Amino acid sequence: MITNAKTHSVQNTAKIAGWLYLSLIPLGILGIIYVPATLFVAGDVGATISNIIANELLFRVGIVSAFLVQLVGICVVLYLYKLLKSVNQSHALLMVLFQLLAVPITLVNELFHVAVLVLLNTPEPSHQLVSLFLELHHHGIFVSQIFWGLWLFPMGYLVFKSGFLPKILGILLMIGCMGYLIDSVTHFMLPDFGFTVSEFTFVGELLLPLWLVVKGVDGKS
Image 1 (tube, one colour):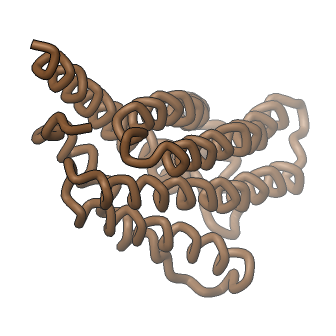
Image 2: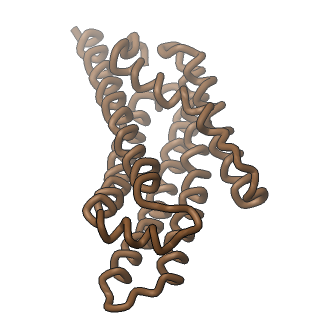
């Protein structure tokens, strides 16, 4: 009876972690990809300002989605900690630390978009200031991305060593870490690099939550 109850609890933890992790995908796509692709015009701050003014609600939705990603991300890492801490508590704590460090950085970075809204609601908004805040937000994403990558390495190691999740998922997560870190380094060191590695190394972040939702774990954790 005790074993069955523990197994049920572990499975619930795995599935909740999986569903929460999956929810980050549409929220992240909305705020990081869709809104900028829809509203921002490279090299033309005037057109960008016009798009934001004409679609202010969408711009605000992008800000809120970024806030939600951070809040949900906290829940995700806490559930993953509960699931994986039996493998190695030190590595599990490192996973939590890296994820939590990203939260205040990303939340503060969103204030640059809030500043854009404040400026655009003044009588004569400065195009230069709007452009500056949009640029700062763009660079800030790559600062946050350092920690979005770093938390994947201890998580990948824990998954790899767990025995109750496929080792390949752990390997893919660690590869995902490298993708984010490479993108952050090249963004600041080689701004004209023009290639995004993480577009091809994120697979583990999709497969792990899908596995947790569909298959769960075997209850040995």
